[in-house]
Amino acid sequence: MSTTDRLSSDGKAELAFNSENYRAVYNAMNLRLGASMQDDQLPKHALKPLPDSPAAGNVPDLSRQLKEYYALRGWDPITGHPSQERLRALGIESLSACLPARR
Image 1: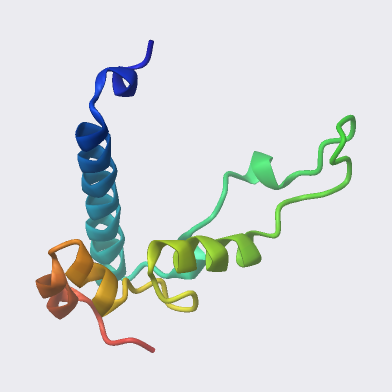
Image 2 (image 1 turned 30 degrees about the vertical axis):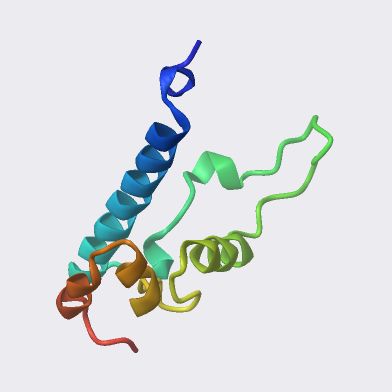
């Protein structure tokens, strides 16, 4: 039994909300410190094709995956900035004042 199995549905929703809130703040702070989409990378070993697997010779299309991930998070798929709507939904809209100007 995992820890989340013991949570009520309200507890699971609260955990998911708090996790998303944390990730948005973490991303915003990285952006403020100068990080960009180019800094979101997988470890080098994850980008090497596996010779003996069903996906032999293939590596993840990280650029496409990041754009999809950002869009699912409610972030700009080009800059990685959280959208004002997403920050508002998380109750942290004031965080946008800390973000660098969008390029």
